Length: 74
Length: 317
Image (cartoon, rainbow over all chains, first blue to last red; front, top):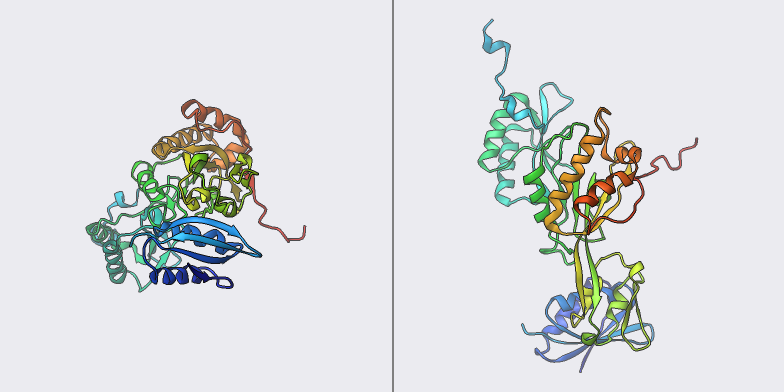
């Protein structure tokens, strides 16, 4: 599974980086994003959902969050 | 002396609803244009630019209430300005003791936070109520699509703020906790069973939980406008207070009309007085009771009068 570390990247750059990473994988593939607490974890999942990707879950790790999602159809 | 020299022919009907505002310079006026919700088709904007270039002195002003104002217009050109703007279907706005052009945020069509169609509401109110004389003072209406409230709805005589009431269908919830993370108001907490718990008294109806939920487990049980009444700015600002919740978009015009009718009646004989000050004098219960008759499902049980905002903070007394 692809993991993209977006920790230390602020909004909206983290979302744009997530979009670029999603361009590299096929629809249906599962990908993980590491997100900082605060604005990133509040905004990035919601924005990715509105782009048509399927959010699978959110796990809290040490000081950050792991968002798992399945890439939607183009 | 001929009649022609004594007077300039101006169609006074153009001036009736206001919108022509005297400037400092001799013969010069500002012409305030009617742009409900601040949204303007580019073709109309081009026509405005054309007229401004021809009759103004190279500048326009964008008002705080989302209007384009043609500045430095000679009053002799009023008729020509009105006629040429009309070719681009642009109308002149109002001033004085009337219902003003409503303001609105971008709304829900393209703004990710928007919960209701504020642009549609602004157009509807503009069509049905714009220019209505109040008999007392100006009357402002504004629409915000969500509790972020960029248009500062509570500073209007009647201010509307988009709202949803969330409800969870537990079967569809995957327990991801994104709603808990998204809720900045402490209205959602994760229970021991790994499912979210809703704490209704903390909810401000922003709908962030619905927007983030991956499985649509959170849904809107009610959607509409939070309505605050009696706000104004100026020398003695007031913040409008809560009078109704989840007012359906279709009832906005009727609701404003009811508030206007109450205002017209209660302010009778008081001269130039704003709605908020009338509510402070009469007590908010009087208006609540009047609105409850027509909108029983949406008017709140109790409220407080519009609140004075101290603007001289820091000034020594």
